Amino acid sequence: MSDSHVPRHIAIIMDGNGRWAKKRALPRFAGHKAGVETVRRVVKLCIEYKVEALTLFAFSSENWRRPEQEVNLLMQLLMTALEKEVKKLHENNIRLQMIGAIEAFPKKLQQLVVKAEQLTENNTALTVTVAVNYGGHWDIVEAAKNIASQVEQGKLQVQDIDEKLFAEYVCLAKLPTPDLFIRTGGEKRVSNFLLWQLAYAEMYFADISWPEFDKTEFLTALQSFATRQRRFGRTSEQVEKCSNNV
Image 1 (cartoon, rainbow, N blue to C red):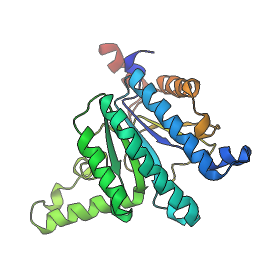
Image 2 (tube, one colour):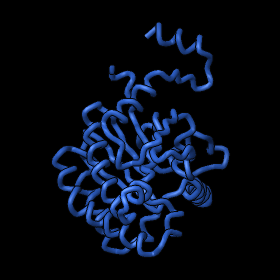
Image 3 (cartoon, one colour):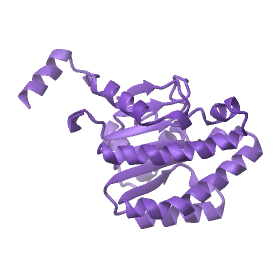
Image 4 (cartoon, rainbow, N blue to C red):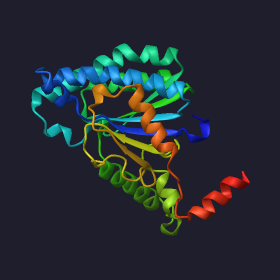
């Protein structure tokens, strides 16, 4: 597969952990732990295939509605992953960042996030973004509030606001927009994930659960992406003409 057919940025909803565990008569949390192994596998594959950015939906703003015990275990799993994995990421030149309302999490977790981001901020092999306590609606509202604040302070004029400027205020503004969106677990919706950023992403839905997402499935997603003609409002003829002129 040529580099030109590989997405620069992949965004993933890692769905199906609980169902994977239930099918095996295991507690739901066992599915989340198995999902961490899949994250490791996919990070390695992204580096192997020269993907620039990987964004993972780990905990949505709606996930607080889950049973308290499961939420607490997820928080502990996230802290453990940060404590154990960040050094390995840094050694492999991988940058880690978190997006979402981090201030809602325990202080220890917030401190681990800051420490991880500071340690890896200059790494260049791959940027891994983990969305925690994140929602697409929240992201857009926060951007609107920040822009409104700039207008109040006289730093922006209303007529300055357009799509390009707005895009600078949403999460992931410094990364290329996602080219490929993947969701495992059989569901076919974006579930309030990166609503602004996914406007032109190609969609790939896998029926298997996240713990089952292996190299074969990853390559199937990339091959599916490679067959898509990305027109961005243009006609097929215009796209083909541009390609022939490159």
